[in-house]
Length: 117
Length: 115
Image 1 (cartoon, chains in turn red, purple):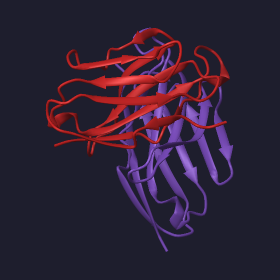
Image 2 (tube, one colour):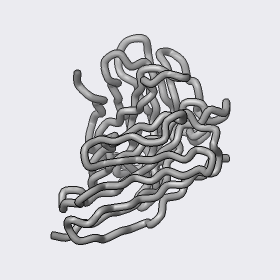
Image 3 (cartoon, rainbow over the protein chains, first blue to last red):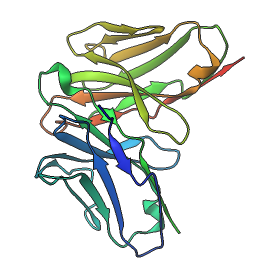
Image 4 (cartoon, rainbow over the protein chains, first blue to last red):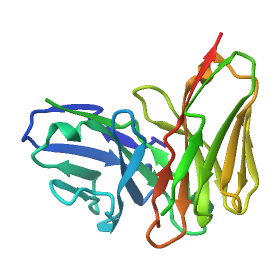
């Protein structure tokens, strides 16, 4: 059972370009979370998705950022018109279920390190 | 609003000593608490998950305790090794509707074990 797969591992974009980050959850996991780790800072929650639904996007910047988790395929975090301040490590995590269930352990991918030049 | 604090921010010990890492959280309404390890430039590796009804979890040289009422968790690493050098993060998953599904992370404790 492969872990959470993120690609690309490293991504370089010029200011104003679009960045698309992909996350394939662990097999059997239907909950996906995106977190951002800015240099010298802790991980901050961005968005929580289930298949075809955004459950909580309270940590997403209001502009330029969007996320989806389609019925088929990976979850995508999309950043339009990137700026230097978007440079960070973006981590995806998945879990099997929510609620009072032992299977709420979150498993993280290796992250995508975005550099905006 | 949940706040997660980890003390100390950095720790250096000689090989063989036991490590004690502290995590505190302000809102006791949690489902579980998870300890992670992060190596430089790498992702997060889950070490231990403690459900809110549990007092401790053990895995090999690692033992994590949880006192939900006082908002504290401690990660003990016995007989430290240079390979234990990493940043250790604790995170809580809250039960309140505005925290549903999120992990709230502390800033981490950076550990260096010297040979």
